[in-house]
Image 1 (cartoon, helix red, strand yellow):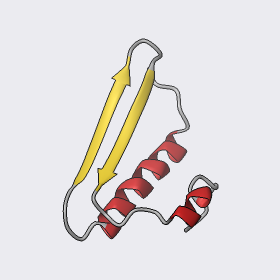
Image 2 (cartoon, rainbow, N blue to C red):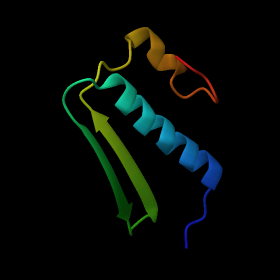
Image 3 (cartoon, rainbow, N blue to C red):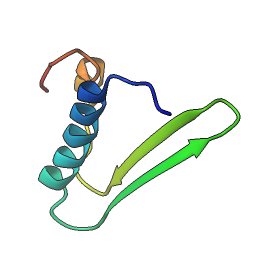
Length: 68
């Protein structure tokens, strides 16, 4: 059984994948999901070879409903 805020979790995953697709013109996008049975955590990784985030914009990254 997984207990989470489904709506927020979906929103974050969709945003990460959408941004990877939007900003990766060449290269690759990797999406991984793993489960750690020791602490019962699910981990999602989205890795791409896109432009990345400007250093000045990193502080804005985890604002609720914020955009860069």
